[in-house]
Amino acid sequence: MVGVRALCAGLAALLLLVGSPAQATLLDFSPAERQRILQHGPWPPPPALDAGNAVAGRPEAIALGQRLFFDVRLSPDGTLACVSCHVPSLAFADGRPRSTGRETLARNAPSLWNAVHQRWYGWDGATDSLWSQAIGPLTHAQEMAGSGAHLRALVQGDAALACRFRQVFGADALRDDETALVQTAQALGAWVGTLVSGRSAFDRFRDALARGDARAAAAYPQDAQRGLRLFIGRARCATCHTGPMFSNGEFADIGVPFFVRPGVVDPGRHGGITALQASRFNLLGPYSSARGDAATKTRHVELQHRNFGEFKVPSLRNVALTAPYLHDGQLATLADVVRHYDQINLERLHADGERILEPLGLSEGERGDLLAFLQTLTSPNASTRPATPPGPGSRRCPA
Image (cartoon, rainbow, N blue to C red; front, side, top):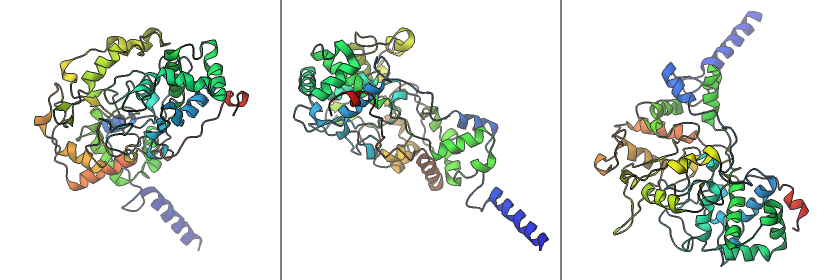
């Protein structure tokens, strides 16, 4: 009897190690493949603060920014708030091909998750910080159509908001209309900068590889492992979608039409650099607290002809939640995205240096494996509204 029990225990242990054919098997990733996989972590990265934002990281600024994010009074007609286009249950995107403010826009709202870890903001990189990015939708005629004068009057007419602004910005609070606009944006940037999504199934797999835990790594689905091997290898996705954010933080021409309407094209990065350099709200401007190397990226960005029609390489974290895809929602599903790269039309590529993109000739099974891998980049908390502590500001001001 003892021998039978020992035999059963040994078989059970063996099953735990090797699993069934459908589970608990680790592919024979080469040392080079493992190294490329490890480059996509660890997650979360070291904490970061909104660039050039003197109040970033302060609890009272974060609490004020959260309050403002959901406040429709930021738009003069009281119909739109930041949350109108950045919906928590949709990974802080809006699920539309093109976002809708007061009118339908040329592009869609990207997810705000992990935005503090990006280099540039907007599909064209027209801004270099979270707070400067917020100024655009607050004031754009097709979006919230607000102004510094409106925001200043709103806050001065609300005792609770005015108290919170004074707590955050002190004697300088609401000094003039433009200051009121910038301070509203900086509070928003402070809160959005806290939106860092949690760990995904990929992160658990990656970390298991890093510590040499083959048994834990083997729990990662087989199709996702095969998709990951394609992603870092033959499909060359990781050339641009690299690092812990699964993005190189830059811009690329991927051979998609960029017509807004007949006869009108979206200039993409070319227009973004032009706007960035002209803005008084960039990291080199009078409202930025950036010092030394913090504004190097803005100081040295250079406009080139090749930038026309380039758009941001988005982070792939939580990508399964942010359909439709591309800057204007041209591709409805992740399967469409994979198919686009698999069958890319090289004649549509116009920028220099994009020869890394070639038709892949994937099989149906390989396309399915890539999709399975992309699904594992989603964090469990990415479709829920994060809870932010109210901070000291809400305890000392009127409700």
